[in-house]
Image 1 (cartoon, rainbow, N blue to C red):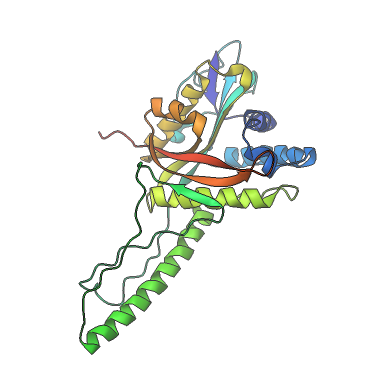
Image 2: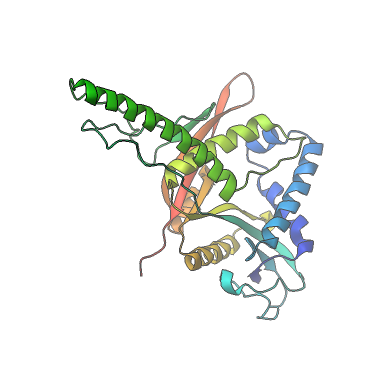
Length: 309
């Protein structure tokens, strides 16, 4: 049987081991951490990250612990979601960690300045966001968006042209500032990981850039619970432990009044769709494969909205 609760500090290394083993078939892992030394550093980093999530109030990490007997119900709840306002302690940590889930709460901070002039009659659709080098954003629909075409409104009086130019300059400055603020809000609300020096930062940066761009385009300024990882020990797969953890995280999001957002590998999409998630975007990045050929790595952005009451 499994109990779902926050881990004890001594179980942080177990979550790190599960993380690495469950990602062993992911083609990005050997690119980002190509040596045994870098994998060892990754293990230490992930264990530390688990402790950071555990130290949050309320904790932002849950485990599914395989035990022979159900611990005291005041310490853990058997296969039951935990409310962040009433999160029990981790207990004595007896048993084996079968799975874990980690998340962040993202509440964007917008600093948009009002335009210096009222909008002109000619529409100016928002520009398409620039894609990270080596990555490609995927649209949730089958047909990709065409490029926006600016519409010309004909000749205008000189004073109108003058204000038109100033308004465009102000708009361009505002868009540039917004882009900087959007980047900063990722750093403020969802801190960038400080990866080990032994890691290959080229592929870490490429992934981070592609994922954050797709995430911003999918969620905009909406607050959300970002499920960053859910990993299960290979020997415990197929026993419903991942589903139980997902229900627990969904309950946390429900208490916060937030939707659940995640980036899914292609093979895990059916699992999340069965739980009610829908596709809201995605991204693709180029990676090397055997020989001179170039391959692609893809993830799908998925969202679970809270049911209306």
